Length: 481
Image (cartoon, rainbow, N blue to C red; front, top):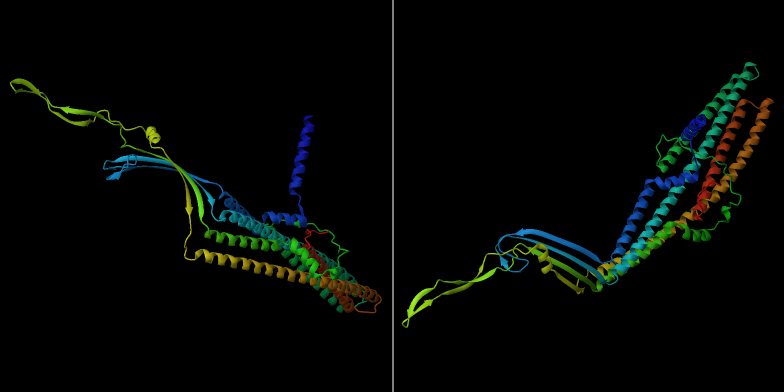
């Protein structure tokens, strides 16, 4: 049993190590999702959304009352007012005051209400902007992804042509050694081989740059070993750009494109700005309440009051002996004078107040009127921006339809050219084997076929990407079917 557990642990560790070192394959969908989580531009857009959400929460919190507390303590010198008796005093005294105040807005011309609504529209506009940034990034990633597939296919074709040229060079060299071909044919094949090798280098460079572009969009390091999925991407059988017209696609895009929604939200936000500016015409009413108390070291308990009595003086009055006594003023005896305790003072000096505050605007130097006019101009600018966005969308859709139609015709022409050059090349090969044409003619036919094959590959991926753009405006997710 011990050996069984030990063996299982070793196998699990080996499998874990193998899975950790295995190279993951990135699909187009995974690239898009990864970019949406890590791309700096999208992170900034998401941060902007969070900022507007906080602004909306702050606007809603304006409906709640505000409560604050205060605490002051210190010592005063010179001729000051005792806070407990409100009398002047020249004695240095320590003081302390505490208080709690609360207030709530009852009416302010709808400023809070429209502020909340404006903040909500701003939040939706920011979210739509973030969605638009995500869509634009997805298009860029799709183009970079298809470019990699294109250059990989071109690289494979270039490598195949290099192998064919090398094989042809060996066959030609044997025929030259046998005396069946002149030495000039070898030079022609060498030139063809050099061209094929140059095409291979160019294809490899293009592929490296395409991978670098995709890594930059994904915020990956340049040395990251990125491997993408290489699916077989057929041309959709139902793809018909000639059947696409501007109006239906444009109406669909109006409901699917986030930048159109963002423009609408900004108009609504600007309209709320007019109400906010007009709210300054109205008076504001607020309710307030206060609790306060204070303490002072000069606040003393009352002392004992005594009368000053002089000693008795014996006198003789009217033949009789009398006693004379002088009674002085009543004075406060300093004994038993104590400072009132802190909590007792706080209790004795405790005060409360509640009230209603009304602020009525009478004349504000025309600022409110100018703010209202400025708010109306903001609405006009938002409407113009919406019109510009819609017009740009219409132009982009027109261009996308025209590009898709041109791409289809280009693909059809490239397919016909490839088919014709392939037949011509096969015929030239047969004639070359019979000695009817020389090696130069065979090389020329092969170069023409290579060019036609490269043009066909370019036309195919170009048409596929243009179809994806049409799918984008129809609101379909970007994926390789």
